[in-house]
Amino acid sequence: MSSSSVQKSFCTTKEAATLLGVSVGTVQLWSESGLLQAWKTAGGHRRVIRESVEKLLHKSPAPKQAAHARDHSVQEPASRRLNVLVVEDDPSLLRLYEVRLASWPIPSTVLVAENAFAALLIMGRTPQDLLITDLHMSGIDGFAMLNALQKAPEVANTRIVVVTGMDQSDIEARGGLPPEIEVMGKPIPFDRLQQIAVDVVATWQLPARPGH
Image 1 (cartoon, rainbow, N blue to C red):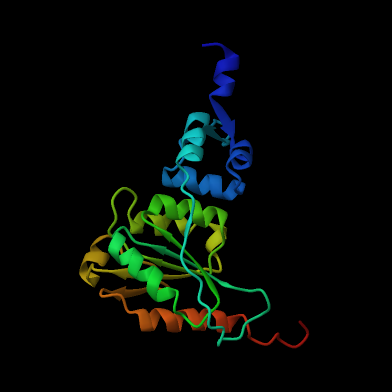
Image 2 (image 1 turned 90 degrees about the vertical axis):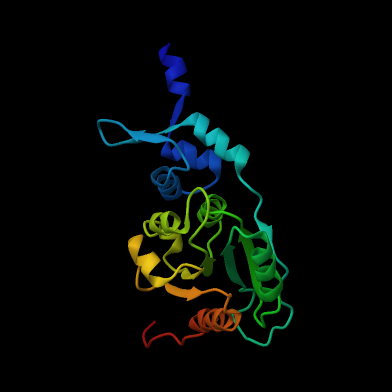
């Protein structure tokens, strides 16, 4: 194989980020979670298989957007909407989320993902205020997704909530979840989820500290 063909077979994280339209940090996250194939050189520089970048570009799903709430009874900063991502592999439950969240009295943009693969793509490209996810999913499950996201600066300000049919002993057997993640059982507790959404919006309205 010629040196030119080898050169074309991989790219740097910066080049991959430019091709995918995401940050270098997101490319690193996707490499660590297995969405991209990569390796590190002897000098510690990450190299990404170009074919995996092209496959990801081809497979990237267009985020599905649920209906927006129309009742603006919760006041918030001008033009600010609550960005919500729901990850659930049961189509009927995903549709239920869409319908119920559309009735929230909060101006919001709701995206839904049928698997963790799609969710990681969305999180890497669109900052979210609230992430609601199941744990038991085919392919990359919720545990692997959340572990990968812990290293991502994109979710530093994201409130994460798990809604699952797994009991606490099953979750602990899988290594548990970070204490800041609230875990809820099914059936989906929509009233609690709405309160969490209201709490998130309320944090935007906290008065600035003196001197700021």
